[in-house]
Image 1 (tube, rainbow, N blue to C red):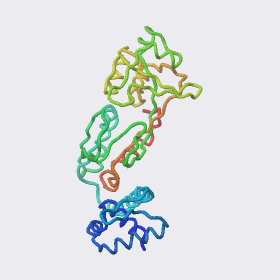
Image 2 (image 1 turned 60 degrees about the vertical axis):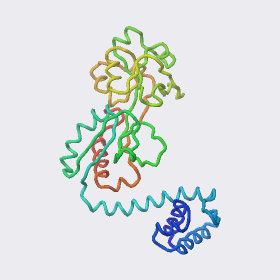
Image 3 (image 1 turned 90 degrees about the vertical axis):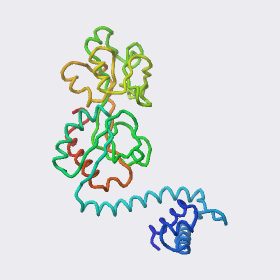
Length: 301
């Protein structure tokens, strides 16, 4: 028997809670569904379902197999849809979620070129500094920076950025320059207020040791550009990605606070729900961003 059909029958039984509803869902007979599942169990040499007169539920092995089977079925569906979508022109409304500072500084300037290239696409870019649930909030994709949370979302890396601590020359002259991580405890640390880990800076010592610095108190803001402005104004030390501070650094408005510390590298990703990459509009925009950011290295922002 066809392996994908066996997987689909088993997964549908688990989803629907029984053979009768699974048969109705698949549009085949109950006996055919049972035959597919029995063939799968025989091939694997394992019982995947607990069967009683009242209900059907996956065994421990069955539950583990179900999770993997769903991935395979989703991938197969995406592969079929991709072939179809590649023969279609990108069009329709594309809804994108992106952090305010990155959207303003790096997406907004390139949207014109994208829309010129794909005139049948309409873009709705929503700027915010919170974690957005893409599916429930109706987004096609998002741009996310840093470590990705475990989820069902798919991700494609666009480029990288680096983070470093920066402060104005006036601040460093007034309060002194820290020379090691422990010195930061004596300084005013500016930090994000919108992220779960925003009150903790993850740093690496010259020895390679991973360190964490708490930034309780002082000024906290839910926007990176505002943190940069605060640092330029001499209000304290900020820990920011290079796409925010690079211009200010090159103009001498801020300085690298502890140059000897290794810079932390963060990935910049396009994330999207399973199946969305097969939509021509989503694939076109992600491919466009990969091309636009191709020449930017971690320190080139």
